[in-house]
Image (cartoon, rainbow, N blue to C red; front, top):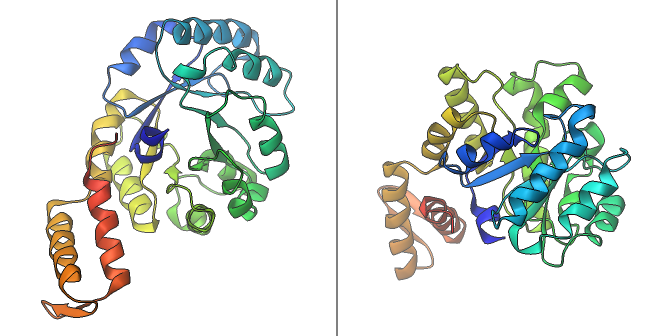
Length: 273
């Protein structure tokens, strides 16, 4: 579960494409997400579930995005996961907006399985703190495309979704779980958009990124890590903080909150465990 909490990149792979599972695992992402939900048509749901069962049964580890509570596939997805507790660091739950239903679902998962609630509705955003506080939640993820569709805005607009992103960051911090994972960049060939999305995500407090293509992984891993300048600054601040409760260095006041931010930067600089 520790790796899930500190991971920078989560690479989706459709559950009905078992030929891509191994390629995804070798793509350099911190976490592979086998997707049984949006990436799989209704006709392929059963086959996809069996492909995921086989992959996990071979000893491979992955997060699995299951079909949502209320769909006809949900119960079978959860039952399949119960057979693979060692290979399942976390389950990604779509349309997470009810803390009560999320807590109930967690009871059916293997003991110790983490939960990544995918917050992608207005109700989920408004209940972010309560959703993140459900026992077992490791960190939330942001479903930017689905939320934008519900709100009737462009999912590429940082301004349109900034309140929702900030609400998710606040909810995660208030609940004491790890920082959120940002939503996907849909244009896999547009590096400029990917870099802009990553810069905005980091600026508002996200520390992870959902990826939909292997080529997005390396840039995301790089941009989500602190820069050399940030690391140098953080080390100076931490060193100064050890010497005095309040001090000044290079014209900047250094007190406990500043030291805590520096420590968080150094923690982000470490490779996910």
